[in-house]
Image (cartoon, rainbow, N blue to C red; front, top):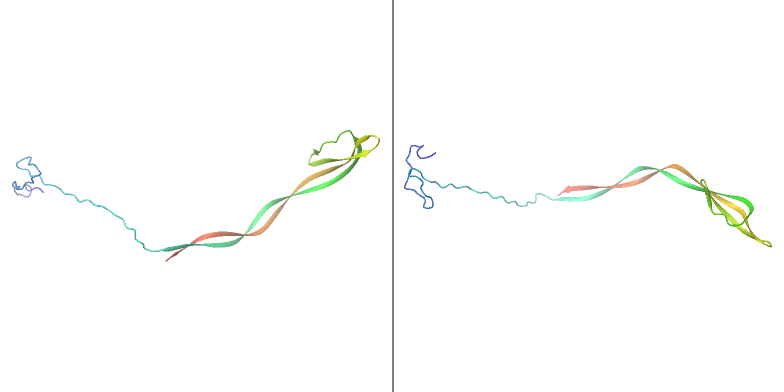
Length: 142
């Protein structure tokens, strides 16, 4: 409230030397404001201990395993050839020619036999119980 609103006359004799009077009936009143500063301090309120515990559990593991078997079959040929036949495949069978030199008045190649190697694949289910380990954090307040 101003002094006029309170029914008083303003005191014109009180003047701040830093402030200038703008009007005879007005008094300039300096205003003050407070400022706040905030600081934080770290306070230890308690302690904790963290450790690990390893637990084991048994789980069933199922996996399809593949086995490969090889059958060897020998076939007698007994045929004379001019040069060695190459190793070849017929389907899933690998054919390896076996040569033998025979001495006659002249030398000739005789295809004595062929070795046939055939691969077969077999799939069968496999089950085994295995131990699986898992770690957990254990927190204890001190």
